[in-house]
Amino acid sequence: MARWFGHQCVARIMAAARAEALGARLGDNDWEHYYWNHLYSPAGAEFRLSLFPLPAHVDGRTTWSKAFRGQPELIPQKRYVTLCRQGERFRFIARTCERWRPKVVICLSHRHAEEYIEAFSLEGIAGEEHALRPADQARRLHLFSRGETTWIICPAIGGSAGMTSQVQLDAFGKFIGARLAASDFKHCLELDAQQPPARVDRQPERYAVPPAEVAGRDLGHRLRPGLAWSEPAVTGNLETYA
Image (cartoon, rainbow, N blue to C red):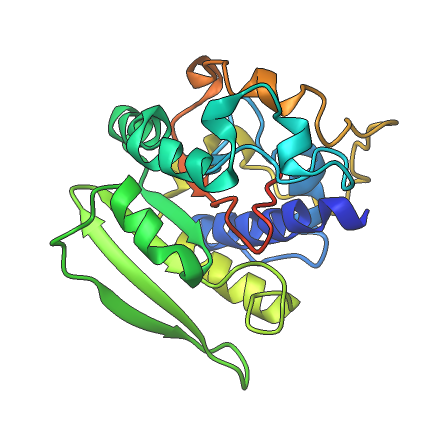
């Protein structure tokens, strides 16, 4: 389950946000029930996007230049990053946000604050700092607000400076939930964490569709209004998750 760790952390955050919005007690296994039954569901409360969606390594071994040979607009990798920033990708993300008007947009990793600010056109908006301190280690949050949407630039999931502990993830979820309403979770009002989660027999492959094909697809029809998760692929080796 190591490859699904990040998504499990998102489920824990969202379960805590739901409990906070509903004014309910957060159960020990609520995150697992949310993970198996609600996370990224078609009518769910959240969806996830990447600023730079193509993976650096298709299978962990193939290099970028080999995977995308024959596509000069993607070689070298810096050209692809520029293409996303100045081309259709950032504009697509901006249009998606404008169309669905999410209440909260979570931007993972302070390293890419400039990219988030550019993608969501947050230049000139005064931000505010917030220290999330559920235990002895504080995690810094940078908030921007415009209209009915709040962007939260937060630490990445994992790593020594990221959010990994249950206490941190639960606290962050409650922080988000305070900005949401019970109606945002009308699709999953039940808090039946005591029920066995409905597990599937087989997990999908990490990249069921070749990255080169994904780049040419319009996925806008799959999106639903709610909480938007945006994570750039420029994290060390440009790794991202589908």
